[in-house]
Amino acid sequence: MDRVKTGIKGLDEMLNGGLLSDTANLVEGAPGTGKSTLGMQFIYNGITQFNEPGLVMTFEEFPQQYYHDAEAFGWNFRQLEQADKLRVIMTSPEVGKADLERVGGRIEAMTREIGARRILVDSLSHFERLTDDPAELRSMLFGFINSLKREGLTSILTRESQAFIGETDGAEEDAAFMVDSYIMLRYVEIESAIRKALLVLKLRGSDHAKDIRQFEITPTGIEVRSKFEGREGIMSGSPRRMADSFIEAFVTPSKKPRP
Amino acid sequence: MASNDLAARLMGDMAPQLLEFLKSKVNTFVKWDLVRFFHENPNTTDTAENIARYAGRDVATIEVEMDELVSAGVLNCQHIGDLTVYSLIEDPTMRSLVDQFILACDDRQFRVKAIYHIIRGMR
Image (cartoon, rainbow over all chains, first blue to last red):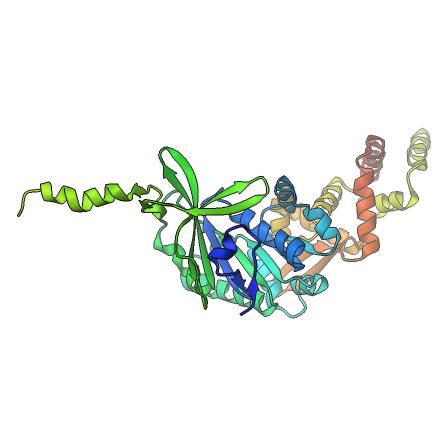
């Protein structure tokens, strides 16, 4: 099976070698967790390490912001655009979707023009303003995702989580069924400090790491590090030491009076 | 007469292709803003409503000006289903002219001349 390496330290190992080719991959997390950075790094590494040109499709975020943010990591997006290895496209979900659905659309033309193999769509959350009907939204997203696959693009689709810390509500899980992989980014509070956690929740058609890893946004991009040792309830946002859980489960009940 | 002399002096040392671009294409401040917007975001494809939001302008004003930029060959207008969308024209010559214009705007003297020209044209 063809693997599309992210080139992100520690992540490809979690993905058993990388993402699968021509698939849609959801990266979901609260603002500031690093969704866009992960996506930009995927595009940048694709171009510079694996010779796979890429597209960035931004909804309502100015391309200049991406050039600026990328530059902070030493990734020169303007230069890559000039070299016809990258296109940063600003559009709206309705226009982007309609353009992809028609024959000979602008995005299709750009994909062929630069031979794009990867795309970052930032962010899928903007589709939610198009309709209040969950069935219609699901149909829209399904069509959009399939049109990316049709173009032979391996996509990273970001989505904003409503909760800063802890679990989100079930309404956000719908898109997770449509994508081929689902990566969750979370803030975690440990001993009065905020750290970041990454979990590969799903990777359709492949094995993957099931543990929750720490990650950091370094001056050169995201680095996935070791797993959280000796703690549980990481994704709740407030993990406990496993020893505390053991005491709670086995020691505390014995103190309670028997019914 | 004196006013015409001043205009001639101001425009005299402007590169002919930029002078022509200013006279025939970017002849309002809204168009200037739009040209700058598309120069900074060259792969933008969107509706007039959304571009108006991005540019912080009124859609009715933007739409008229964008249609004129389409007629002038600076922008491209397409119909995708029931959506009318605008983008910067792909033509490399026109894109190069847009680049030259925006680059020239970095120079204060050029901006003063361009502003004077636009104001004169609006009278």
